[in-house]
Length: 110
Image 1: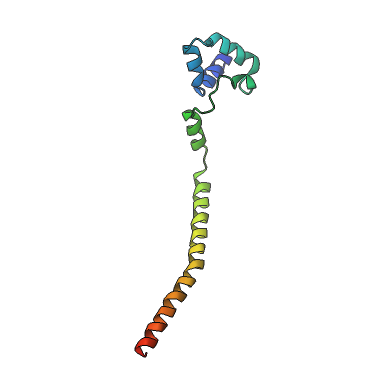
Image 2 (image 1 turned 45 degrees about the vertical axis):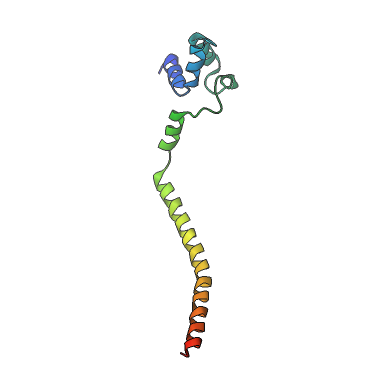
């Protein structure tokens, strides 16, 4: 892959750069020169990236990299933990029910 192709891929992952060019704040030539000098992982790009903008492609890439088997195992573990908590709280409810039944039995003489 050529440096220009790498730059195009980099730009496609950062659509906020398009806004800077459209608003005449910079040019594609200037961005390419920065890319040629510094590459992708430099602080020089921070001024062009908006912190509050959601990068949809980045989000999709993250979702694509999620291991579904691992996610399923984690969900199963959480379900088991919730079930355990439910079991631990049920005896208290059963005691209340059984004490009410005993009172009713005593009331009716059984």
